[in-house]
Length: 199
Image (cartoon, rainbow, N blue to C red; front, side, top):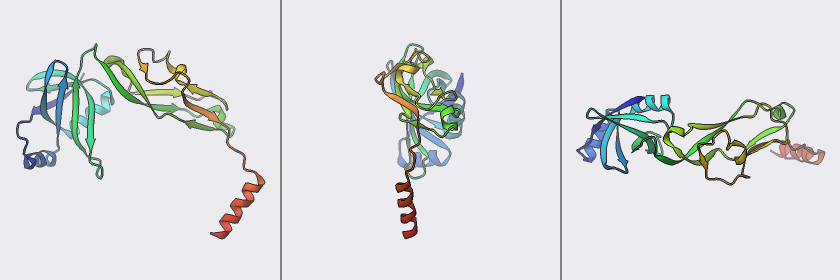
């Protein structure tokens, strides 16, 4: 279990918040069904290191005043310009807690179809799922190495491998396919040459 040390936050003045961030801290809250919402702060570097180890949906042991709570990173706010994390929400969980979340879809490998001139088209880059916290995948990986041109992967095709997850998508919804690359006709090629000459 990866531990993240937190401290209670009692002073909510804007000046104090600015000092906290300048010192590498991030304001955060912890909430859950059986606890009151608690205001805390954590160190950005420690959060980054823990997330690298457990992943976006991994369980974190949050140590607050010597007491540990199992939490997951539920949400966070970024500065739209600098992309710095401004605030973090943690949800206290146990092994029976079900979570609604989204996970990234990662295509692994180069398909046989691409090697002969096809192209891998990905239609869904994230999937919405529900699962118990211990069953949450950090990502959905699809090995496309042996796929030929015309091969399509739908939601139904990955359900068996991720049977502990409930997908909030229709079974026939396409995730990706290996498609033909459209051949350029002589007319289109000539038109492209004309456009290029006019630039």
